[in-house]
Length: 253
Image 1 (tube, one colour):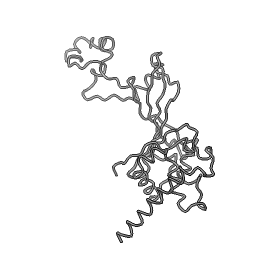
Image 2 (cartoon, rainbow, N blue to C red):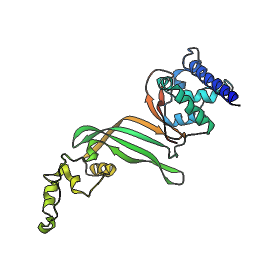
Image 3 (cartoon, rainbow, N blue to C red):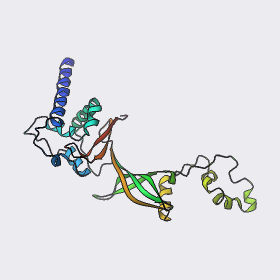
Image 4 (cartoon, helix red, strand yellow):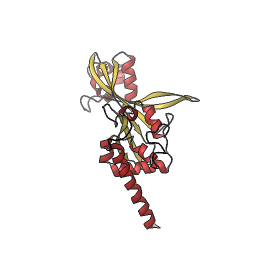
């Protein structure tokens, strides 16, 4: 029985290797670049779900494997072939499909901004969120950048409100927000952690931070048990272009 399983696995892996070489290397393939290019993330999902096929069932019995391979950036697949093949096998074994309503994917947007009137950048994490029934929205769930970290300029145990400050009607609060504004978090409770999203919202609300445009966008999926992958946009004149899997990693199961 073990020998039979081993033989089956070898045949499967050989079929995948043959599939890749025929899909990417054969210059006589009949499809034009535009037919291959994945122009929208919605199209990426449809191709993953076999709703929009490049290789048809009547053309090849391995059409599902081939269509999943075509979702990879070529270099990503070649440099991580064993891992990629394992992920494809797992996705087919578990009948995994992608949907906008899933809670297993996020978007990371690196944004060009103006901060206090100067050009800068910030990174936002977004996730689909259900509003009601079948209505969804994208929700900003986190932010990264020096503007929202609020890290103290200096670490000093003497920067604090002293126990006797209440006797002077907390006059030190004036100094805390003027002379020590770069150390304001030191006046908070012990082990205080900055809520970056609240800081971001406050900066936007007070007209201090403005997003000009998103200069880089990626999507992260943890839909397949034991794996996570990133989808990025590759703008090039090639069959292997558009929204493709750019990174792949194992995750704890």
